[in-house]
Image (cartoon, rainbow, N blue to C red; front, side, top):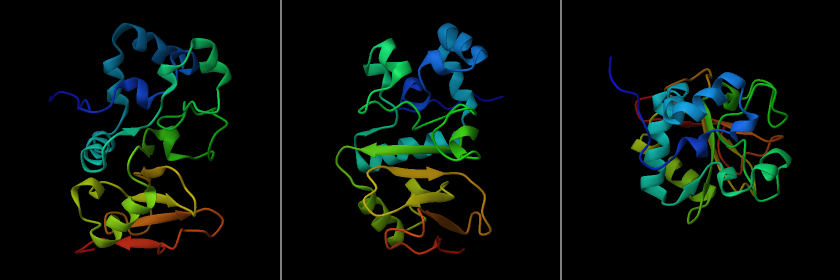
Length: 180
């Protein structure tokens, strides 16, 4: 059996909520050997994060580890706790969110906008940074780039664009892959 994939550019703290918000069994592992928690994620999502970081530069998912433990629980406006994995009982997002299944990430790039990423995706949906993506979320004014591995009717042949109340930020319903 091979080793687990550990991203080059992201710590486990960036992909999970604070330890106090983890299920007890995850919290135990977190305090004992937190790198072991990378096993929870499909390697494709971890590879995609590294590729996005290499292509678009500085990127953050969660930043709760830069705040105090009191702020972790209460939350503060500039803190992100649920942009990676979300507990099943998390109040953020849809009931069947891919985030709750370890298959979605919300990337906040420092020097790139979601529109710039979408523009590149429209030109070449087969580029390495998009290889494993199955769905993205898009709406006007979006400040983060959401991608996931969720299923859809053209899985592997197109990247499905999830709208927000009909707004897809000018993107088509699906972005075709070459050979799709």
